[in-house]
Image (cartoon, rainbow, N blue to C red; front, side, top):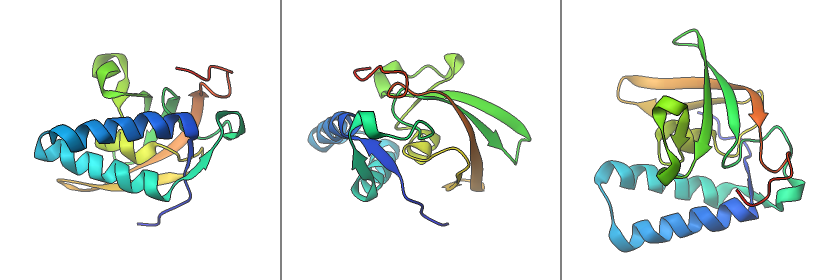
Length: 140
């Protein structure tokens, strides 16, 4: 799987680093640990930019995105949120969910692949429907 450049705002980096710090302190379940390790790896390789400088087609925290899933031949619409705000029925997917960690920092047109129990899942970011930074909402 090709690893592309990803972009994260300074604000998101600070909040995600706090989340990782809490995890380090309390060490949750093994499945959560795997997702947080993946998130940590993504943060380590990300280009960190000021919120005002993030391109409007990049998935940031609290962005609402339309993805296409080739294996299901359907579009999926999610809002990427912190764990406390997750609500699958409302389309709010946690950053700790595999797909949440996978899409953070990628941009429209990128195809993301990640391992799942039945093989490899692949989605394409088709559109960023809402990005807080592009809308001027810098403190969501």
